[in-house]
Amino acid sequence: MKYPNIFAPLRVKNIMLKNRIIAAPMGTPKATVLSSTNYGGLSIWDKSKGGAAVVTVSDMYLANLAQEKDAFSKYAKDVTREVLSICRQAGSLAMLEIAFMGNKNTDGTIQGPSNGKHFTGGIMKEMSLEEMKEMKNNLVRRAQQAKEFGFDMLMLHFGHDSLCSLFLSPIWNQRDDMYGGSLDNRIRYAKEVLEAIRTAVGEDYPILVRFSRSLKVQETFKEEDMLYLIKQVQHLIDIVNVSCGMDCYGGTIDKYVANTYSHSTIFLPRMYNLAFAEKVKKECNVLVCVVGGVLDPKEAEAAIKAGKTDLVMMGRQLIADPYWPKKLQNGLEEDIVPCLRCLYCYHISTEHDNTQCSVNPRYRRENRVPLKLEKVESNKHVVVIGGGPAGMKAALTLNDKGHKVTLIEKEPQLGGNLKYADYGMFKEELKKYREYLIHQVQNANIQLILNKEATKEYVESLHPDGLIIAVGADIKKPQIMGIEYAIHALDIYPKLNQVKGSVVVIGGGTIGSELAYELSLLNHEVSIIEKQDALVKNANWLYRHGFYNAVKDSGHLLKVYVESQVKEITPTGVSFIDKDGKECFIKADTIVLATGMTERRELAFSFYGITPETAMVGDCYKVAQVLQATNDAYFIAENM
Ligand code: SF4
Image 1: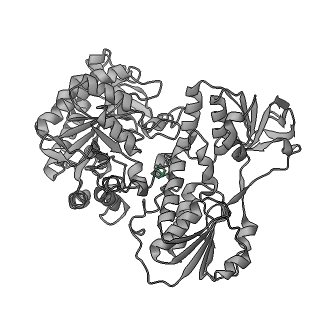
Image 2: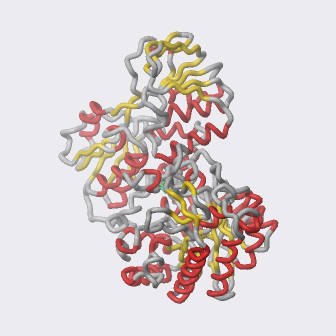
Image 3: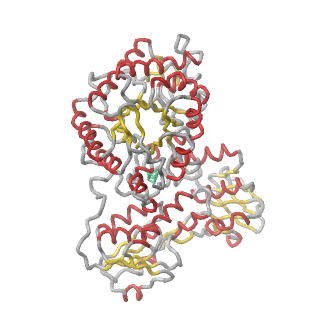
């Protein structure tokens, strides 16, 4: 057993966890759209089958207790029962999340500790003592009914946007009664609620409570205050779940800033809450479960072994691959699909626009993407041209279906543009994904032809029945005078340490902005010239804010010129028209071009006519992210 600490059982009161992995609640769909066979139910099935000891069922399954007396609305009971049995049948324990959140009042205001601006941008209305009591009683009723319903344990969400966080905040809590002012007063309500729930469910019923170590916004409390709260309530709790940030901090220009700590991007280190978890372990007498950026089994194993945490809670990685625990347990680590921390699976990141997983086409489509493709009796020979992420995914899917597959790549190695993941500071997850794909291709029954530039004649000579073209994209070279003095971003990545002096990056998409940030961390003076009105506009919201936060927190200065048009590149710098129409010149020792890529459409079109079953996937069809490449490739190959 390579990971004895991750797979050590753990007794918590009257239940036994078979390992140290808890699947996080992920806000799966509301009960009204949930069934055991749609994606909500099946994602729970996957996580349970995948080997997590405990699967958390999201709070969204619960009724609004302000309107209904029963914790499970009559419409939700059957599906909740089914979800519960899914966990049991698939081998995990079921934990129900109950969130300690303020209700919306009938006049549109939102309950909170005091009157003022609510963190969502709405109006916060001070809860009366009567309302606080009603909320406490509702939570108690929910907890009791969850236990009676058969959930093995409870997760009380006292982190992120909860009333616990708001009452603890010395800014949001301006009360002058026994629930405001001093630290003891600000923790009083959370403590009373926990006491009431513990009394109601009894000593033996396991309770995990999530707290944010910090809200990471200006209204936050201090980490020491949170530690103090935990010390005061530890006797009421079995497991402290250490999180960070908020979910919906939308009321200011810093919109989404707090989300990048509750759902971390590539710009935060993995397991970024571990130091606080360790503090709780050292100073309290309670089990600890860290959440946030838990992806790497070696890191999780080391943290548990070192006594910094007892358990790990995993969210995104179990979307990317719900079978992470089982693969690890069975020595199939190289078959784990790595999560990219790109957050396209999170609706807040995408604003409900195309929420999917970049590496797992089954996510949110579990009802039509089988766990394993049924092998067909096939004599079909399908040729895939191009060994980038789309080409490899297509070849693997074709192989899973049982077709004979030939994959042709012109470079000596597979990977396409993912080869640049070797160089960037924030590309470790991408690099792992490339290695995962290469490993899968090398171990599949795929004929791999490297170092071969495919031509129409050559492909014809292979007599394919089907053809998938994944020839990628070329660097886009805009018509700028003096462009020969610039180096392309992709060419500079392998020699980042050789870059000299001040740098101007032309193009502030993800490639240009990330590169500029990295160069600033290497102490170069860096300017970015971007023609749109903001940097990284091609990325999702949380990436964008993760990037802004990282730049701000680094203390390194990036000079940013948006809505600016480059006029000329010279050997000594770049002249451009800024957003006020002023002509400017920036001196630079190195000028980097990051103006994007363009589809190799003509090359792709040249392969048409060999077989009627021909399709383009990935960047040659449309330059996009890994998400589109993976999903396109899967579905096109699956239909061949
Ligand atoms: S969308 Fe990205 S962050 Fe979400 S699970 Fe998939 S790879 Fe991970």
